[in-house]
Image: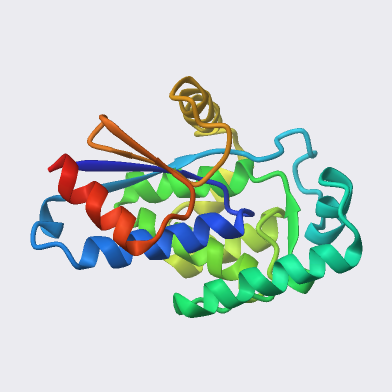
Amino acid sequence: MRVDIWSDIVCPWCYLGKRRFEKALASLAHRGEVEVVHRSFQLDPSIPKGHSLRARDMLTRKYRMSEAQVVASQESLERLAAAEGLEYHLAESHTGNTMDAHRLVHLGLEQGIQNAVIERLFYANFTENRSVFDGQSLAALGTEAGLRDVDELLRGGRFEADVIADHREAHQLGARGVPFFVIDGRYGVSGAQSVETFANALEGVR
């Protein structure tokens, strides 16, 4: 069985959904038969590469929320994350163009360490408040995750077409947001669902 997971590095619900899915997968007797592939979805590819802005500023503009509403929403999300063992620091989290971050995830797939790469990027963004946008920071994070040839990748455009293709496929499948899970090419699960929901979906498609 293969599970494709579309996400964006700057999406806090994606990291939460990843952890809940992993807990569901760990509870299954046939977990060793499941291949997980992380796919790319850019929430805002219009932001120039290398640029970033405070997530709170983006949320107030995009959803016309007050600063107080954004703060309350982020604090609630931090509590949900903590319940799954994740440490979020959203007050200073940033958003931006994640093309290069996604290219590192594709390189991770090629080198057999994709999960380690995307986990390192999520942790850097939401726990450490490190940049996942500028080349120098991404090069360091990729190396920390165990990637080889990171500098060479970031100097060129390799995997850009793959990132775009992933995003296009998600839209073709009906996804308008992330996280988005497709189990065995037959069953879709949208959002950071509960551990029980993910477990039931994995068992039901088996």
